[in-house]
Image (cartoon, rainbow, N blue to C red; front, side, top):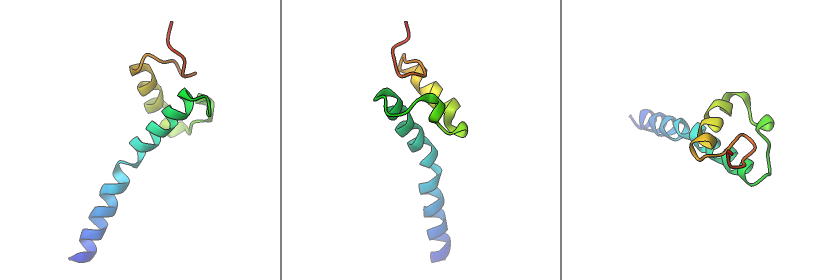
Amino acid sequence: MLQRLWIWLIFLCLKGGEKTMVLVCVSLIINGRRTFDQIPANLKDAVQTDLESMGLGTDGKPLA
C-alpha cells in the first residue's frame, strides 16, 4: 500500500515537470540567456506557443 502511494506521488510530481521546463525555457529566452535553437526539440512547440501567447517571437522580443 505504501509503495503504491510513493509511486503515485512520484508520478504526480513528474507529470508537471515538462510544463515547469517550458516555463524555465521561456524565461531564459526572454532574458536573453538562451536562444530558441538551444531549446530541446521535445519542448520547442510548447515554448513557441507560450511565447506567442505573450505576444513574443521565438527571440523573446515583442512581435511587430
